[in-house]
Image (cartoon, rainbow, N blue to C red; front, side, top):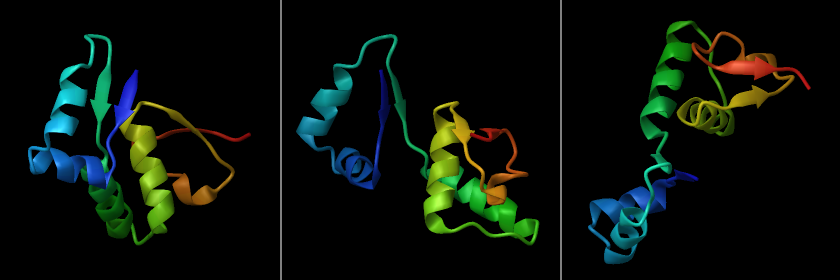
Length: 90
């Protein structure tokens, strides 16, 4: 299973919330825990260096796809040129 942590989950971990810690400590060896905040920033800054920008929602979609090694199904050309992002047109 892949656990994708949102901002609230990350905040709970930073506060050492017992419930969140307990939940994540029960993950198995085949489970992955992913957060994409760093990837969000990397994609945002890389696009800005290229003179391009993405809407916040698109940045999160790209960061989540990168964090989970997913292939993004999209016809939106805004995602083109994002390094390591696999895209297929539906």
